[in-house]
Amino acid sequence: MREYLVTLFICAALCYSITPLVRTQAIRFGAVAQIRGRDIHTVPTARWGGVAMWLAMTVTFMIVNHLPLVGKSFGHESQGIFLASTVIVLLGMADDRFQLDALTKLAGQVFAASILLMYGIQILWLPINGVITLPPSIGQLLTVLVVVIIINAVNFIDGMDGLAAGIVAISGIAFFAFAYLLAVEYGFSRAGTPSLVTAVLVGICIGFLPHNAHPARIFMGDSGSMLLGLLLATAAITLTGQVDPNAIAAESAGPTLLPLLLPFAVLAIPLVDLLLAVIRRVKAGKSPFAPDNQHLHHRLLSAGNSQLKTASILYLWTAMIAFPVTVLAFAPWWVALITAVFLFFVTVVVSKIGKKVFV
Image (cartoon, rainbow, N blue to C red; front, side, top):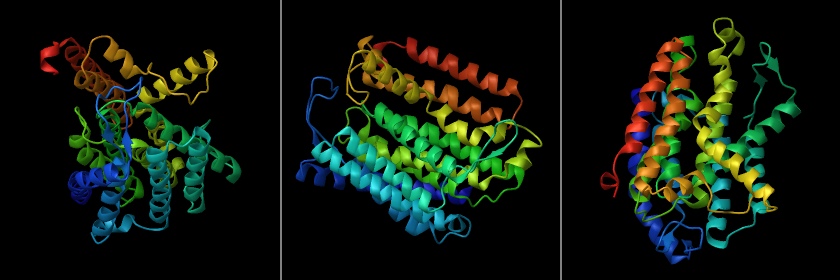
């Protein structure tokens, strides 16, 4: 645990330190978000926050590779994750600068997912009526689908200062706790790719958030949101490869189901937002990828909430789902229920707090 915490803090410190330098270069090369009718920000703001995240991740990998426990997490899978992350960040950089069309971005996301497949990172089984081992072709198709959905779910919520970074940080904490406790509970190796990836994921979010919180001095852009989505998806998929489902299913179905379900649970709010956006746009006769200003955060803002209060409410909604689901895998249902009820009341209290607290 200590080495993963060291990894997290190193990554956070690096991301915090590197981000201002990347911001300067983003402005220099014109990777700047101008003000459009559907935007919330009121001044042009640099993008390319994902570049700072990628640099922090890369340097962190180079440092923690020499740690006794975490160093064992590096291998063939880690190489694939790094290459896929590099491709997705380059794609995002191009989009942040030149505004690529939706199909080009989708093709790039599929290509990044294909790199994961080449390095053996794919869904191998599903917990249906016990455990079903998937044919390679079905597993590969499902892997690409999961990666693309999670990437776009994170991308869809990146529409307000600090929102995506905070939600993904909460999601990453929940997933790290699940992956680490699963290893402890069932005797799996604690030096696993899922724990390493989520520690880095939480680190880059925490390091980036001070620069991205309202009023944001830099946006993560598609280079950042797609990177975060890719890392969260790979953490889930690599965990399924590390777990022996038959050994767990013999005792409890919960931990068997969660490796694939947890990312969708912790990203329930972004996924609901994504689904509603697709339905809304298709009903209006528009492309599912056409941008608009009807996302959940837009609606909370329209109700009179400030950006800080809106972000706080959405953080708590995420925690209210993510943490009880994680607890449910290792504790009685009533403990998970108490956790959910507590977070629900905290959310209600925050929602009722006056505007003066959230300036």
